[in-house]
Length: 170
Image (cartoon, rainbow, N blue to C red; front, side):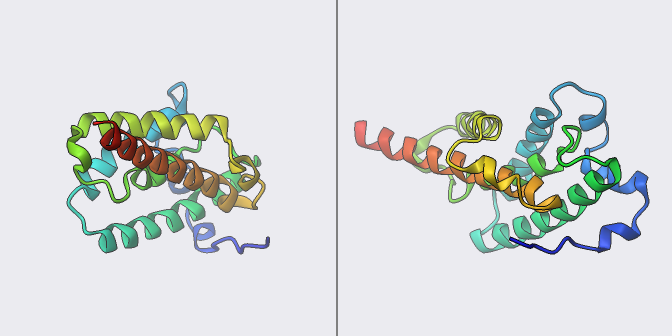
């Protein structure tokens, strides 16, 4: 699959591209940068998207994913590596996908949903089952971001299945 890389990030300085793609010190100075990027993304998802309509959230998420593809791909190119661990904007940008269509379902407390979504996303992002690993083979930023999109959607589906199972058992 030949997906064109966004060209607009090439006009930006190294400092801007690398700081955005690594979320500054979260990717460059802390251990487990993907986990820190996911935690930042969790806060982002909860603060920004919790009161959005589905259409507004979808539009904002798509813009965020496109920006992540551009910044992550360009940062990897400048670092001379395929998917550097320091780049964690991808984890940040996809976290809202873990909670799609989840607004107070089944009376679960927000903290439980947030924690479960985070844990499920980290599981799917690290283990990469269900063909998620193959998405990393896509070129540049597309491969960096789309495997995380798939992991976030798998986490979301698992959350919804757990909620349906919980409602059935109750």
